[in-house]
Each structure stands twice: as structure tokens, then as C-alpha cells.
Image (cartoon, rainbow, N blue to C red; front, side, top):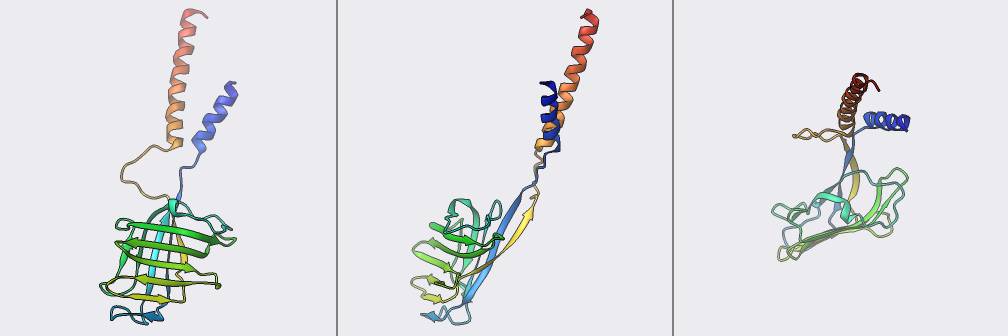
Length: 192
């Protein structure tokens, strides 16, 4: 029993406390259909979103909306439309597909704010595009969805130090050792 306890304590001491966030960012192709002076055929959607960890490999039509920590999508127009998680009225990150390395091959992402929206969908070559609805400032669309690349950031820095599992284990181990020494001395003094 005691051997199992010490094995557990040592395993806790050696445990790693690292983790990684994943930010997916990219751009679409240029608009090929647009209305009003706000949009033209040199503009395109840019966007990014962050998850607490990278997407798994071989996802098929998966909804990842609940995993999204933050996002920002822009229509590329000066004075145009930028939607972030902070100002969005609704958003969905649906039909996400990844390849064997976890790279996004296609997705259907829609972000909305006050009746305006940015949508990027597809990316698999079957059906893909971007759509901007920015009433009364106009609409735009293109045949190309946002193509995402990922940046992984390991061990985010915190301003407030928090003991890791291994630090807690070391403190517990030290406490147990002091208690063990005290118990041993008590038994020696009482003659047991």
C-alpha cells in the first residue's frame, strides 16, 4: 500500500503542466460579385479564431462552436465590417473537416452582428465561397472560402503564478515527510 502511495506521489512530481493554444488564420480569394462603392474585386475576407488546443485529425462535419475562445473576421473594406466574439450577436463554426495532420480542409463559419454577417464556407473544392451582408453598405461574395493555417502557442505566460500539479505534489511530499519524521520520533520517545 505504501509503495503504491509513493509511486503516485513520484508520478505527480514528474507530471508536466504544459498546454497549447491554436490560432487558425487565413484569407479568402477576392470578391467577384459586389454591390455599392464599399466593395470591389481587390478585396477579400480575412479572419482568425483561437481554440484551447489544436483540432484533432480526421474530423468530419464537426461543429466546433463551443470550442472557440476568440475570433475576428473582417470584410477587407475600409470602414467595412469587422466581427469579433466580443461584438457578435451570434456565430457558428460548423461542418469542420480536417485531414490526417489536423489541418482544416473545409468549414462553414458564419459570424453575425446587428443583422450583418460574414460567412466563409466550403474549401473542399466542391462548394466554397464567401458572403458579406453589410446592409445598408452593400453585399459582396466570392468563389473562394478562407483557407486556414494554424499557429500553436505552447505554455502561455500568466501574470499570476499558479502552482502546477508537480509543485503541489512536492509540497505535499515535504509535508508528509515532516509528518513521518515527527511520528517516528514520537514512537521512539514512547518506546513503541
